[in-house]
Amino acid sequence: MRDPSMERENGASDSTAATTTTTTTEITSPPPMNSPRQALIERLKDYGQEDVFALWDELSPDEREFLVRDIESLDLPRIDRIIRCSLHSQGLPVAAIEPVPENWVSTVDGRTMEDREKWWKMGLKTIYEGKLGVVLLSGGQGTRLGISDPKGCFNIGLPSGKSLFQIQAERILCIQRLAAQVVGEGPTRPVTIHWYIMTSPFTDEATRKYFSSHKYFGLEPDQISFFQQGTLPCISKEGKFIMETPFSLAKAPDGNGGVYGALKSSRLLEDMASRGIKYVDCYGVDNVMVRVADPTFLGYFIDKGAASAAKVVRKAYPQEQVGVFVRRGKGGPLTVVEYSELDQSMASAINQRTGRLQYCWSNVCLHMFTLDFINQVATGLEKDSVYHLAEKKIPSMNGYTMGLKLEQFIFDSFLYAPSTALFEVLREEEFAPVKNVNGSNFDTPESARLSVLRLHTRWVIAAGGFLTHSVPLYATGVEVSPLCSYAGENLEAICRGRTFHAPCEISL
Image 1 (cartoon, rainbow, N blue to C red):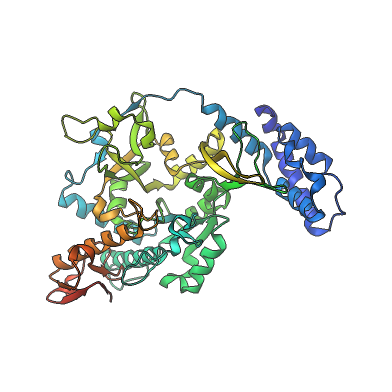
Image 2: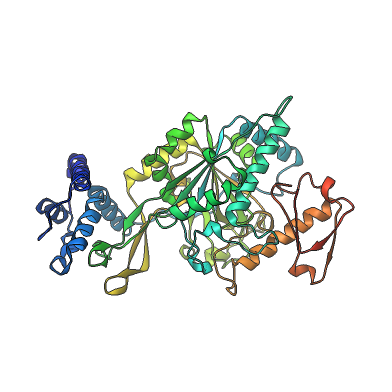
């Protein structure tokens, strides 16, 4: 493999050579190839990856051309650097884990009504001024849910039949309206929240078509930007490329942490700056209860003056399989560790002063960043080139084989943060992930559906409404359209004195 100093010297010329060759191929049809291009073979030898041509003699002309194009599309110096840095990092000692200091978390119990009202108004004012952008992590397919479509297209079975995408789009519409009404002086003016939706090569086309066919769910087409996360070759434990077929590499998305690099490479960070965006709300598509562009969270974030923030929920029990926020080293930065990194004694340890688990703050992929910080992270992660190595079954030309996927995670950014604020939310109000098919033990469409119906039922009763139901209430409830209410507000005029038969949707 090539020396890092040589990479810096030769990276630009390598990239230029690849680009030039690809462009020429597209303009003129090359003659049939009886052997791989010599320059390409030499480049692959530099990185120890020449085995990708092992079955060249058995390939058809079209397959040979496909393989050459596949290899030429790679930024080989960058990929080699990532493989080496990531494999090397696995053998390095990890700083000791410490609990998050109590004063770093804004707990539900510790917040006053005055704080909430102040943050809500501050957030709405910031949204009214066009300073908030929203990033949706939506690169995954719904394979574990039994569909091949993008996960955001999934309908969890609510009375309205709405998909995850539609519910989230309508929450944006609701917040835009609230910001215009609450902050605007005199006649209301339109408020626009720009929505940046990260797809993957496997979901991009289907996602765009889905939004277009549904007329963007009432949003303006030009307030949505789609962009793709990157992919990386899957590798063996020795760092060799795995071939999915004799003429193509096995590749996988680079993790939800690829959002930082993807925003930069697609020049969308520049786009945000040109729109006057200063703060970025970032979340995952599979949480049906996500409060997109939450004004309270935004106001809290601004008030704290932090570079990054995350919503957290308390672990339900010590062995719950969720990542938790910790401190790396004495006085070190916040980061997230997976449940498998905590031994049983640490996972069960109790803070004697609070009575809570010492490691209790679960990461639920609800984040807020300044735009300046995202720019810093995009540069830092690319420079450091350290990815998590996920051992998985990789499709290969010899059937499934054990190999490594290279991934970055959204929470990798916290290691770069000069300050991070944690904001506790209630699981039953803001976190209902949809990950596993019905019949699984947790995070199913059915469990998420019931969470929504129960929350909205509480909203309706608090607003003076009544329910009738022909099945037990614990198994049903009502759904409140996001176009009616964002978080239970402004429902009195719709609900007071009225009776609703569950299950049903309450809409405008």
